[in-house]
Image (cartoon, rainbow, N blue to C red; front, side):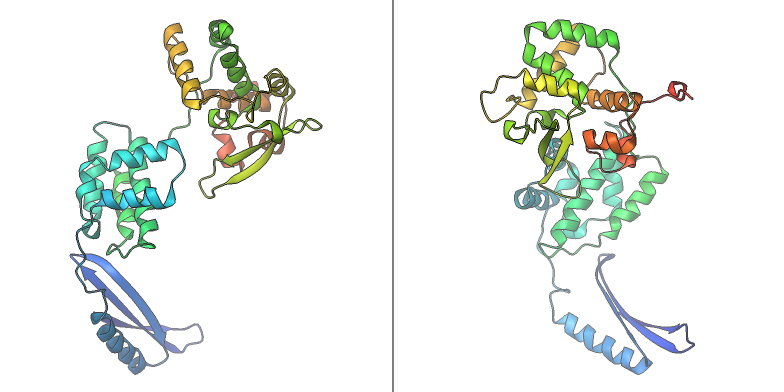
Length: 335
């Protein structure tokens, strides 16, 4: 049904805004508006558009399309990057919400799903489900004809945040101690490739997935820099950047045998498993390989480097993201 609203312009003249909103099962499936100088023109346009829309597929009943099929098509067509995102999307396809017809999805369904998730995980983890579902449906709305008002995600988010059922991820503050690094180094003495990778991560501030993608041909000896291909970036794909190698990290690279394309030719999953098994055997609790990136970034600031200089090593885009990796204490400031 169309509505006509009279508005007063800044110069004192009047304008008439005609808006058409079409709902199905309480969900807005179509909305459009146009502004005219005369009320009659606005009414005529609204009547004509309503007739046109009735003849279009806006009013047509959509076939049942479960959310799991929408997610599967999103994965197939857009090949999302990131192990966590892919794991979460595949897990979503196995949950109760996955069988709901995407055309009939409501904010109530989203709230119910997140409340169930809170019984088995933290609000920070549950929030990811809402993010991934929103991303999938907003993206696929531009690919296939979906009868869904994406504002249901904003409505659900407001309720869930007010009830503390979703939250931003906590800043991780776990850093390895000197004792832990010492016993890990002793443990990996018979596996020099693991010893090198751990300390390279500590000196270079590189993610494990980045370390195992570094290539010999991208190493520039004259200024101790190297290239990272397919750098992790939530806004872009295929990002390639050159970064500075601290002296200690460069020395570790020069100890590696040049036997192929990659400097560290190992499977990151294998390295991660070796590290996890070592920590378990040594009784080191709560230490992740990614914590070495936090340690490295903190040490760079402790060495007196500026934010811009640290960014040339870590490749963080801005201070807001870089700050999450810094674990400095006020007492460390020497002034």
